[in-house]
Length: 203
Image 1 (tube, helix red, strand yellow):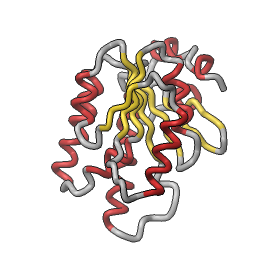
Image 2 (cartoon, rainbow, N blue to C red):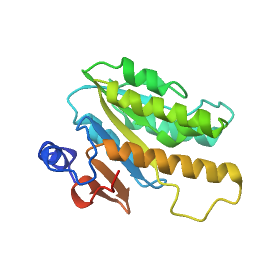
Image 3 (cartoon, one colour):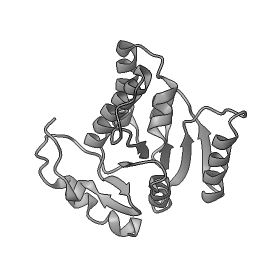
Image 4 (cartoon, rainbow, N blue to C red):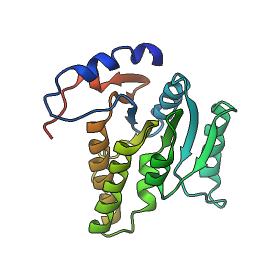
């Protein structure tokens, strides 16, 4: 699938009736999928087609002692065009979105790693952090492409913090998915446009 072809029906879809009553934004794209599914590659292809200045927003904490993670980061860096700007934003993602310019496309990779950096927050504080991020999506003038991990398709985590991560990420991905258009699922080497194939859940 070509990213340019995949986006041809987006504008028309934004003007069709939304049975869930959500207000979607064509400048907000969500790409979700399992580990090693190709979701980052697809998001990068979409960003390259955006005709905007691309800023890669890396949300992972930098740990020089984690050699395997450093190898993954290098693999991503080698795949990206040299003229893309990179920002390391492990925490204050909402401010980054609000401060972006209309000429920018922000590729946020990924939602799960950003959420993991806030995992020690209690439930009330986390709800405020998540809402601040959602509010910033309504305020930003940039195009935003989110990469999110699907973590709820396996067994229930055996430890509490694992269940907290799974539940918070599942909820936040759903909330962003309700705002985004299009929403893509990458699985089995294929890309599905859920905004065209699926029906939004009631709000």
